[in-house]
Amino acid sequence: MCTVTTDYTVTGMTCGHCAASVTEEITAIDGVQKVDVDVPTGRVTVTSAAELSDRDVRAAVTEAGYALA
Image (cartoon, rainbow, N blue to C red; front, side, top):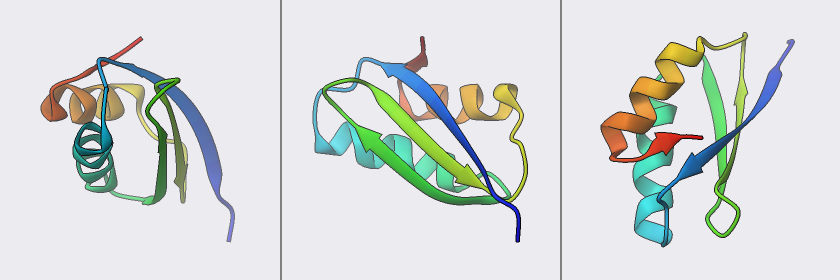
């Protein structure tokens, strides 16, 4: 099975609750297998079955209350 790993920078996250909200919204995107969030750097690493649409990821992050840098 082929997987794609993509890094994003999310602004505004300050705590574990922030990370959980972002993780929950991104995980809901079809094909997402894993989401890793590093709050201090704002780095979000998404592993998926196929390349994701930046529009879908941006919408999920916005739904969580944050923004892509």
